[in-house]
Length: 71
Image (tube, rainbow, N blue to C red):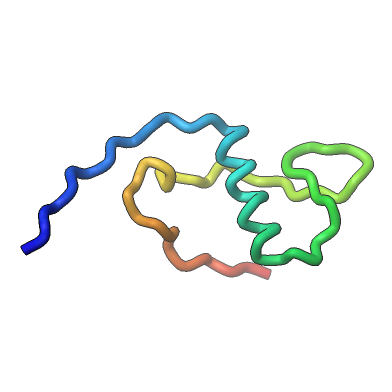
Protein backbone atom coordinates (compact mmCIF):
# COMPACT_ATOMS: atom_id res chain seq x y z
CA UNK A 1 0.00 0.00 0.00
CA UNK A 2 1.48 3.41 -0.97
CA UNK A 3 2.18 5.94 1.75
CA UNK A 4 -0.43 8.67 2.07
CA UNK A 5 0.65 12.27 2.04
CA UNK A 6 -0.68 14.57 4.75
CA UNK A 7 -3.38 17.01 3.62
CA UNK A 8 -2.23 20.40 2.40
CA UNK A 9 -2.98 23.35 4.61
CA UNK A 10 -4.89 26.27 3.06
CA UNK A 11 -2.83 29.36 2.34
CA UNK A 12 -4.39 32.84 2.28
CA UNK A 13 -4.52 34.08 -1.32
CA UNK A 14 -4.93 37.72 -2.33
CA UNK A 15 -7.70 38.86 -4.66
CA UNK A 16 -5.03 39.93 -7.18
CA UNK A 17 -3.55 36.42 -7.24
CA UNK A 18 -6.98 34.81 -7.64
CA UNK A 19 -7.88 37.14 -10.53
CA UNK A 20 -4.52 36.45 -12.23
CA UNK A 21 -5.25 32.71 -11.91
CA UNK A 22 -8.67 33.13 -13.55
CA UNK A 23 -7.30 35.28 -16.38
CA UNK A 24 -4.41 32.89 -17.07
CA UNK A 25 -6.73 29.91 -17.39
CA UNK A 26 -9.20 31.89 -19.49
CA UNK A 27 -6.38 32.71 -21.93
CA UNK A 28 -5.25 29.07 -21.96
CA UNK A 29 -8.78 27.97 -22.84
CA UNK A 30 -9.38 30.78 -25.39
CA UNK A 31 -6.01 31.83 -26.85
CA UNK A 32 -7.68 33.92 -29.58
CA UNK A 33 -9.20 36.36 -27.06
CA UNK A 34 -8.07 39.97 -27.39
CA UNK A 35 -6.28 41.64 -24.47
CA UNK A 36 -8.95 41.59 -21.76
CA UNK A 37 -8.75 43.20 -18.36
CA UNK A 38 -10.40 41.90 -15.24
CA UNK A 39 -12.16 44.31 -12.93
CA UNK A 40 -13.04 47.89 -13.69
CA UNK A 41 -10.55 48.69 -16.46
CA UNK A 42 -11.40 51.63 -18.67
CA UNK A 43 -10.79 51.98 -22.37
CA UNK A 44 -10.59 48.27 -23.21
CA UNK A 45 -12.83 45.21 -23.03
CA UNK A 46 -13.15 43.86 -19.55
CA UNK A 47 -14.65 41.05 -17.56
CA UNK A 48 -16.21 42.01 -14.27
CA UNK A 49 -15.69 39.20 -11.79
CA UNK A 50 -17.83 38.78 -8.70
CA UNK A 51 -16.09 37.39 -5.65
CA UNK A 52 -17.75 33.97 -5.73
CA UNK A 53 -14.76 31.76 -5.01
CA UNK A 54 -16.64 30.53 -1.92
CA UNK A 55 -13.59 28.84 -0.44
CA UNK A 56 -12.44 27.17 -3.69
CA UNK A 57 -8.82 28.19 -3.12
CA UNK A 58 -8.86 26.70 0.38
CA UNK A 59 -10.09 23.28 -0.82
CA UNK A 60 -7.96 20.40 -1.97
CA UNK A 61 -10.03 19.66 -5.08
CA UNK A 62 -8.40 20.54 -8.42
CA UNK A 63 -11.64 21.54 -10.18
CA UNK A 64 -14.68 23.56 -9.11
CA UNK A 65 -18.23 22.23 -9.29
CA UNK A 66 -20.03 22.27 -12.65
CA UNK A 67 -21.07 25.81 -13.65
CA UNK A 68 -24.60 27.10 -13.30
CA UNK A 69 -25.35 28.58 -16.74
CA UNK A 70 -27.66 31.59 -17.11
CA UNK A 71 -28.67 33.60 -20.15
